[in-house]
Image (cartoon, rainbow, N blue to C red):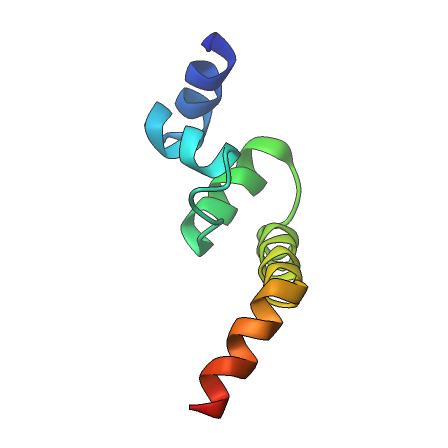
Length: 74
């Protein structure tokens, strides 16, 4: 819990915002990518690419493909 609080303070976001990000309830926004890059020394484009890769992987999961195909048939 204290790590989350400390991380949120370093990033300049609320504990709840960081908790949502860590638990996959929210994604990495461009603003958050700048905060992460500043705090961790990586580029903001790296963080955004990781988010995009994650989003694409979720979209291509078999259960999502089936739902998408069913929507297209209607």
